[in-house]
Image (cartoon, rainbow, N blue to C red; front, top):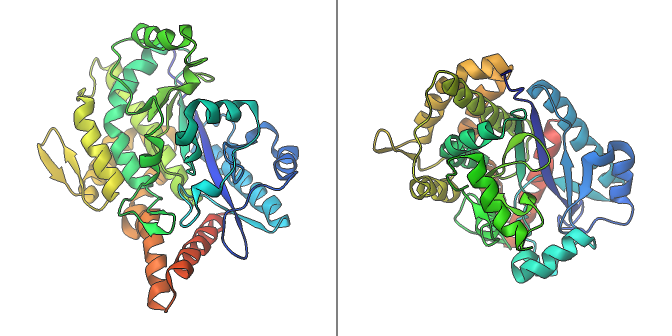
Amino acid sequence: MSDPPFSLGIEEEYLLVRSDSMALAEAPEGLVDECAEVLGEQVSPEFLQCQIEVGTRVCPDVRAARDDLRRLRATVAEIAGRHGLSVIAVSCHPFADWKAQHHTDKDRYNALDRDLAGVARRMLICGMHVHVGLGEDDALRIDLMRQLSYFLPHVLALSTSSPFWQGEDTGLASYRLTVFDNLPRTGLPPQFAAWEDYARSVGVLTELGIIEDASKIWWDLRPSVRFPTLEARIMDVQPRLEHTLSLAAVVQAVTRMLWRLRRLNQRWRIYEPFLIEENRWRAQRYGIEAGLIDFGAGAIKPFSQLLEELIDLVEEDAAALGCLAELENLRDILAHGTSASRQRAAAEAARAAGADGDAQMRAVVAHLIEEFHADL
């Protein structure tokens, strides 16, 4: 058996905002087509008309992913600017009202609106997905999915970027998940023992016509339907490009570490989803500020300690994959805060300067625009 390629693919969803008022804006006629003239199938509309999605090519390493994603971000930002709009990469707009949004008039999205009703209409959220290529070995994808689930709360905590909803501080670091989890077939993936068990379960729903295929299964981690990858979907989208790449690097490196253990006839301990779910909630609520449970140690550890242990655990793999610098850059999130904490800091700075609540939220959006352009 040849080694998996551990290639990378990154998908991101963005919001369009008016450059003057910072309010959400629906994509004007022609904007997506203009983007597609340059980017081809790497750009597409999303469920809501105020959203746009990009996806990198299949990248052999994080360096190629950086070049491709920077090009995608810069192109979308430049074209949006021609229409008086700015782009932000954040999982919830700080003050927009979901009830005022309209979904994109395409068959796929019309079907979602019909099938999911009010749950879908509330989906004013954006995420990022990281694909790691494992080759045509379905058994490997299911085996690693069972083990990789343990690390999903750690990645979520680092990614949190959605503290505000409709002008209110929710108290959560990732409010996005409270919205997304209302959809069916979401949350942590079940613990399938084999690919055949997964395929059999999916087959029950497809044969009944409930879903057309497994692309309508929206777990935090899943075997991709279109690609021979594992797809991590739990993360909030990142305002800063370099943080996106660091999150991709840790997902890639952890995947390789688990594969390396497998080659040695070892594995990561399989924990009940009930226990991992507790860490998922802690990450969703507190981000990196309150620590997660180390089940082996039987203790809640501060995130700073967990991050150093995680870096040590996969350092060998990150070096082999050429993403060690990006992995170590996770310390920048620890030092300067997740986007959720940086957004709160921007709101507090505006409040201290005398801004009212509405102006504070506009200041947060201005901060998000600045961060999006910082690495372009």
